[in-house]
Length: 289
Ligand SMILES: Cc1cc2nc3c(=O)[nH]c(=O)nc-3n(C[C@H](O)[C@H](O)[C@H](O)COP(=O)(O)OP(=O)(O)OC[C@H]3O[C@@H](n4cnc5c(N)ncnc54)[C@H](O)[C@@H]3O)c2cc1C
Image (cartoon, rainbow, N blue to C red; front, side):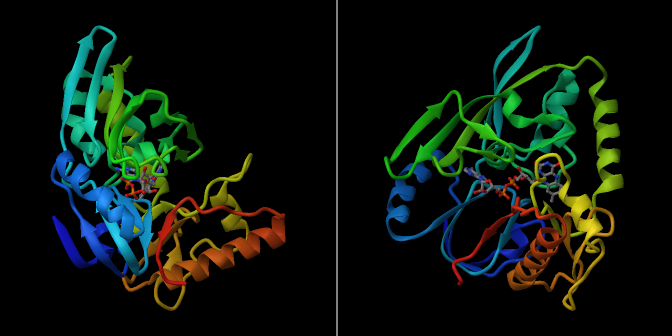
């Protein structure tokens, strides 16, 4: 399905966004193969998963959403665990029934994140509490729109909140290895989710960590120390009182312009006080200025 002039705010967890000129929602991989090579010739593309790390402005281009590419199947299963093939748009929480039934470990630290998709998790190398999704990723099946073909990357390169994707192409499926959990998984997930709830504003519109942690430091701590914890603009966009590195769109009326102003303010203050340059973790997507 190809939609014109599609509003973007509700496709993200922070609820900020203008209009996308085109919004491509493939319902199968054949549609990806058919349309992506054509679209890439004429438009800038942005690949969208659950939108939990994305902040949109106005986008004169095509947003390609994995939202309708959902589902998974077990490829191998033995006493060592299972190998899963998961379509990119599948939300991690959709794997919970299987994980609970078979008591499997691997993605438990990420299950409390709202709307995180498998494709987005791999592209960002999402991680928490000492674990990253790269540790259980055994392959990424993606579509390269320039070559017009599907490819399997067995050993993608991963870094801190980064990977070869989306630069290499549109992630279609991911191979994940889940292992038997040494303790009851339900209890573990409950504990991890409660730990997350205590430290992050999960009930508010947010895009998670605004900045990456500088080496040996924490962006949240730095923002707190320069007086930005709880700081709000007139339009009700704030650095959260619970976690200074999370921007929260309290009024649901903030725009990308408000986000950029707060990002600049934070960078300036941290540079002045600590001589450190903060780098965005959130993906800012706009074709304006
Ligand atoms: C409350 C909250 C808590 C969070 N906590 C954490 C945390 O603990 N740890 C952490 O790492 N992150 C955290 N995040 C950030 C976010 O959830 C992760 O970055 C996540 O991996 C983004 O997944 P997504 O599907 O929402 O991706 P999106 O926001 O849709 O996209 C993010 C990036 O992935 C790319 N991408 C998405 N799908 C594809 C695809 N199919 N093919 C190629 N590229 C693709 C996009 O182009 C973009 O570059 C949090 C976010 C929120 C809102």
